[in-house]
Image (cartoon, rainbow, N blue to C red):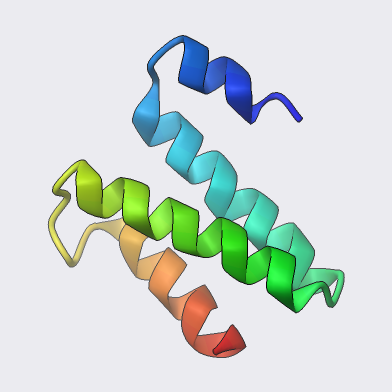
Length: 69
């Protein structure tokens, strides 16, 4: 998985979005635990970056989490 490349390049917003997208893929594939793990990581990264609660990507993450939890 190449999400690590974003980490190396210090592109946190892009990395967080990558975790959101891979979480969505796992959700579609029915792999709930892996989806939750990646979505929670994306949510934490956005929180660590102190984005506003109504930020588009954070809203999408929370919607996905609510479907799975």
